[in-house]
Amino acid sequence: MQLDDQVCLCFHISKRKVMNYLRIHRPRVPSQLADCGGAGTGCGWCIPFLKRYFENAKAENPVEDDLLSAEEYAQQRGDYIHAGKGTPPPGATPPPSSRDEDLNS
Image (cartoon, rainbow, N blue to C red; front, side):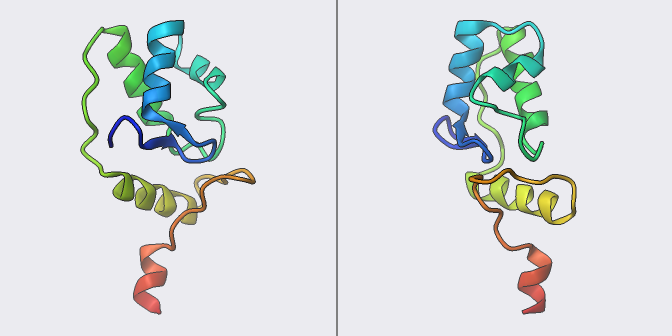
């Protein structure tokens, strides 16, 4: 994922916005990233990514590119939601159709 790709697809929060929030506000715990436009408070898919960004910022490590493309990230979030692990709020980016649905059609 690149800096302008959305990390929180529920509230349309980009990786750049999260990184700037971490740099400027220096939250003490990862859950304070919820104050960054609600990141992590929707379906929950982005929480592990937000925690990793928090830990990297705390250790003053440079921002690394995620290995996933924005499309792969969205597809994996869709799989997560279709598996019943999270429910996106109204207005969230809808998940792509699940891979199983694509195979059965």
